[in-house]
Amino acid sequence: MHKHASRFPSICKKKWINVPEDHWNSWIWQQQNRLTTLEEIGEITVVKESEKAAFKKCAEKFNVAVTPYYASLMDDTDENCPIRKQVIPSHSELVKSDFEQADPLGEEAQSPVPGLIHRYPDRVLLYTTHNCPVYCRHCTRKRKVSDPASMPFKNDFQTALEYIRHNVQIRDVILSGGDPLSLSNARLEELLKSLYEISHVEIVRIGTRNPVTLPQRIDAELATLLKKYRPIYIMTHFNHPKECTRESLKAAIRLADAGIPVMNQTVLLKGVNDNAEILKELNHNLLLMNIRPYYLFQCDAAEGISHFRVSLEQSLKIIDQLQGWTSGLAVPKLIVDLPGGGGKVHIAPEKIIKDKSGHISFKNYRGNMFEYDDF
Image 1 (cartoon, rainbow, N blue to C red):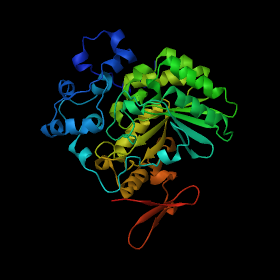
Image 2: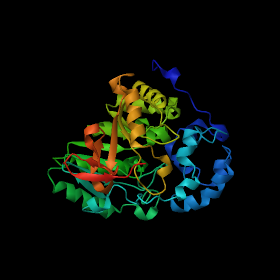
Image 3: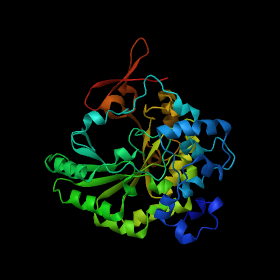
Image 4: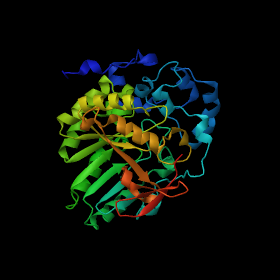
């Protein structure tokens, strides 16, 4: 029994109260029964008229899907519920700012072969699938995620593996998507086995939101599989304390028992977590779950998500309000992922250059300058 298990609530299953436990605890059942329509979502929470009007237009641009588990975390009536803000479309998604881009991080320009992004010298990102258990409205890869046409072909994987084999400086491979844990165990093992057969690949990281949106995926079978291919690091994405449930705790313990380190990458989202007290509570919960708060990201300039963005000034204030008031373990690095493929920058005053007109630029790890649109 976890010492602090009482800190983590079990969820109310709402309309699924009569679903048998073996169904509810099956990640495949959860995937197959995702809520994808306005009518289905309206059965578990009050949908505002403005949300109804926005739903169809937004869903045409970026699909809607929510697992029964994650939908159960939504408040029935609170329109400011941090869970619903992440999953229910709003009219704000239809507003495109001048600085927004379909590919805000310039990934396509740094893709030497299909499905692989090579931005940094010693590591690559491998796009594994377009599917996620939940399609987050703040997703930076809206251009690909949820679009069946973006699904990598098997030949793409082979081409990507050949690229990695022939570039001996690559020691770190990040599996991303979509969500790599949407793959079957057999497909995931095939991929992991192929990567670890490459002598210069030292570690694999898996970027997944399943511990948050579908903790049932982290079952004993998956833990046993991952344990075979250590060192593996799980990079996950909790944004709010409401996401820290008994079910997520169980998933995190299972990964820890398998010797798999888990690190969290929160995205700062206006109206969701742009508050030092909320983030402190979240990060304290994560540490109890054996999950290290790692990065706190500025929201990327993807199309239709400016309503989520927090100014750099406010972000720095939040970090200042955490630093010293809680353990350094609970203070993640504040990160900007630079537009145009400049890479990640840990925000510190000496990295920010502001000219006389107030325009902001950043200096990245190579010493290159990149312009940044702030509020």
